[in-house]
Image (cartoon, rainbow, N blue to C red; front, side, top):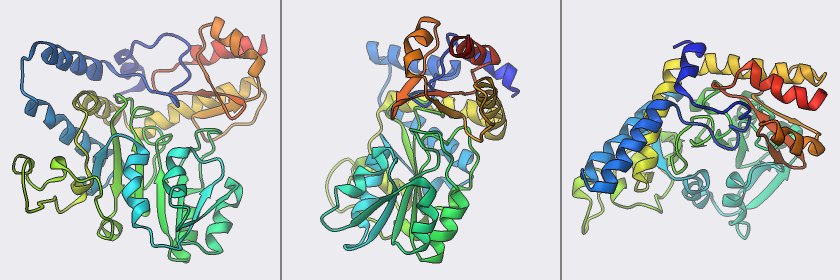
Length: 344
């Protein structure tokens, strides 16, 4: 599906430049969600009819990342999916995290500060710090506060050189930035941003080489090998693959997630990447700044926040700067609307 054709699937008001805050649903996702809410309101169906959406979403996410479906767990948020991973890290381990890291990929390690040595470093020192020795490195593929794209393969090479585990938060990347997920041990994604799913849908890629040593501490019926045989009683009957890390799904989040992921797949992440980065670079050029490699741009213009809002431009404020983020439903007109305020 071409970008111009795909844009007809959204009802975005002009000036929405905050996908890094939350993504907007394409029509198939919105329509599916409204239909399910109608059924819920009237009791027109059974809950089991909603469970299938989670499997469709899992399969769609696996295809987007080009990983086996059996290596994907579903959850509600990034930190929840990271909790069993952090619990499995051996006492005394050295964990390296960027100091600007969003806390969903920082607090899960810091809560174990009594037994783990968590070291935070500037992003430009991440590779050298990992190469100097650590047991685990956890980092965002794209930083929420700055839009900085991590040197993914360099960090992984450094980690492999010292035998360290690699944990990646791709919440601000997955949906616009192509990457090889199987190079990492764990990749978590909150899907309500660039994948444009309802909040409450999140995924984890858990490599087989790593997950066998992790205890599924949140296991419940949805982690069972046979869901319909997992309601009551012993013995424990967990799934043999990454599904044993699933938590019971918030139905409506997944009903919206499956068609949203299908739209991303139809367009293609490579095409979305080129579109998004081109818009971001148009914005940077308008600010007399060099081109970058990210769909997220931050800039010092806090005094312009009110003027941007008055012009219908919605951006975020993060770490003392304004943040604009560009996605598939944005156009050059959105960029120029913002620039008219900032440079007019």
